[in-house]
Every structure is written in structure tokens, then in C-alpha cells.
Image 1 (cartoon, helix red, strand yellow):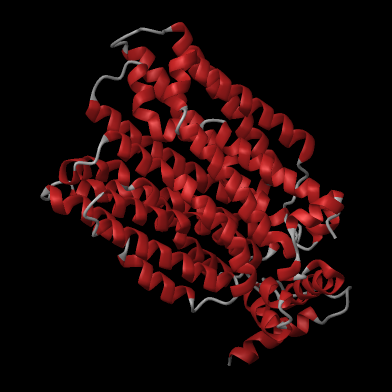
Image 2: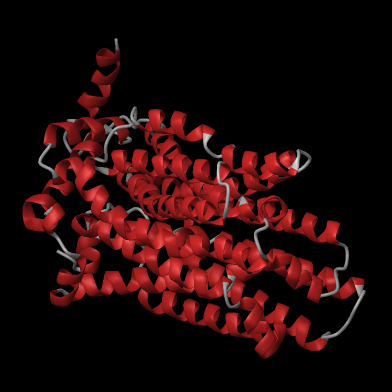
Length: 481
């Protein structure tokens, strides 16, 4: 019956150019595949943020010092570099699907070691393993989503990891709250252990997904690639076109796979240098414009603006998380309709404006205490900043980076871009307190505003629109063949 149902579609696809083709509704299958692959990002967000509440109980139970907590919390950005750099190599050799399974293995082992830890050394060992998983998740989920999706929905599907990361962060806050009433020696351990349970089921589910058709073609497995494309394209004609485009890249030397080196090609090909510089610069601006200073130090920022209630500060922190996640949903809905470039320009322009206003609030009202009006303005501006970041630069830095890299270099290039992202995130999060102590809170946000303005100029001058283009067409656009 299934073959009979497809017959009219195949017949329509084979009609002459002048004949009308019967359109098929947008294919839902690649959406479910991308969702399943992106669930690793939920685990990533959970593991990054769960220490925010667990650290209180670890300090009481194990006698961990504030300095040790600071290192434990911040070191995950450094550890993730290892995973980010290994992910490209692993995904090119084992495939995208098995690399996702491996990522879940890190998220199983790391939190489990921490949940059973009897001292600081074991905690750091578990954090190290989880950090490698973070690096892997940042690379492989966007790459798989971009490669499995048809052009009509690639922006939407490539945005899924970003929204799921924020979902994981919110779940970690829920976990902190749910287990906080238990005895000290159990509460923080269960916070970490809760992140272990989904990994086994998720890894099993990933094995039911198809492999990336581009990776299959790169390895010479054409028939398998065609089957996947038939299942993940909107029409049979589109599947055939995607296969032809992939084969042109592979047979032309563009899918050389394991032997290709992004640095070697960057030294000899101007197009590869351009793409790599765009990826690295986008990832730099995404973090250097200060989003993690607001997300991780939001209560401190609002306390400086005059919010005095700890309960209110924590409640507002949840509000920021909801605003961030909700704005990413808007980006997901718009990226394949209005395009990457307009959203990126609107985002960076809005970030610049809100950071300037926030800096001015601190410059004009420095020292004001218990001023409800000032605090209200600060809260509104911070929410606006988080929203403008998340509607564009937050998710689309990953989307744009994953789709402009040529097939043969996509795994390695995504790993290098992720490494840049993690390094800058680590620098920002570990210097914010010292920064505003040296140049004031107003000075810190004026500095971030200048960086956001520079990102607007960069996007306007250097980034062409990619909406609706196939991944193989990107090689023509950026001259990376």
C-alpha cells in the first residue's frame, strides 16, 4: 500500500518541465530525527547549570571551598574544548549517529562519577568527563540537523539544539528545587544522578535514526545515502537533486573525508579561509558581547541596580531563562521565512541598543539604592537584551556556521568554531566580576555594547544570505571547492 501511495508522487516528479507536479506536504520525518539528535543538548544544558544549586550542598557535605566551587563550575568550558576538537575527527570516522551515542556515554559517566564522589578530586574527574560531552554535543547536534534537513526547514532544525540547551538549563533549576529539601548528603547527589537516567534511553533512540546522507556519500555508500534522502526530502524530485549535488561535491574531491584538513586547505584556498574566518568571528561575537555575564551573573547585576530581595532575584533569574528560551522559538519560526541575515542584523542591532541603555542606567543612577523605578528599568532592559540575543545571534551563529562549511571540512570546522565559542565563554564568565570592579558596571556594559556594534558591522559587510540554498550550493557561493 505504501508503494502504491507513492506512485502518483513519483509519476509527478517524472513529468516534463512544463507539466504541473503534485506537491507533497512538508516532510515531518527529518524533524523527528533532528529533535532526537538535539536531545543531547538538553543533557548538555543540564550538566552545565546543575552545579548552580548543587554547589551549596556540596560545600556543606564535602567541605568544598568557594574557590574550588568556582573552578569546578568554570572548568567545564575548558574541558569542553577537548570534546569540541575531537568531535570533528570522531564524526568523520564513526559517523554522525555513533558520535551522538558516544556523546550520551560521556553524559552518563560524568554525572554518575560526580553523584558518587567522596571528595573534590572525584568531583573534578566527573566534571572533566561531562565537559568532554559538552564539547561533543555543541558540535554534533547542529551538524547532524543541518545534514539531515531539506533546505526548506534547515534553519528551523539547526536551531533546535539551542532551544534544547536552554531547556536543559531550566530542568537543572527544577532539579535543584525538587531535591533541595532532602538531607544534605543526598540532595546534591540526586541532582547529578537525575541527569544520568535519560542517557540510556536517548542513546537507544539515536540508533533508530538514519545516518547523515552526506556522511554516507562521503564514505562511498551511495545506495544508503539515497534511501535516507528519499525519507528526509519533501519530494522524490528533491531527494534526487540533493543526491546529485552531494555526489558532485564528493566526486569532485569535496567529500574526501578523513584526509581533508581544514588548516591545510585554509592555507591554499581563499574560499576556505573566508568560511573559516566567518565561523570563528561569529562564534567570537556570540560570546564576547556578554550574554553569559547576564545569564550567569543576572542576580548580581540586578542587585547592583537596586533589587534587594534574594527571593525576587532568583525569581527574576527564572524569568530571564524563560525569555531566552521563548525568543529562540521565535527565531526557529522565522529563520526559514525571513532569512538568516535580517535576523542577525536585527539581533545585533537590538543587543547594541539594550547594552547601551543598561550601561547608561548604571552610569546615571550609580549608587542608587531601593529605587524601584531604576530596578524596574534594569530588569526590562536585561530581558530585552536576552530576547534580542536569542532571536538571532544566539541560535543563528550555530545555524550559519554549520551550513556554510563544506562537507569535507564540516566536522573539523564545526569543532574549531565550537572551541572558539567555549574559550571566549570561559574568558567572559571568569572575568566579569574583575571587569566591572575595574571599570564599573556601566563601563562593562558599554564595552559589551561596542563589541555588539562591531558584530553588526561584520554581519552587514561579510555575511551573504543562505536561506533556501542547498548545502552543496554553499560551496559555489563561498568558492570553497
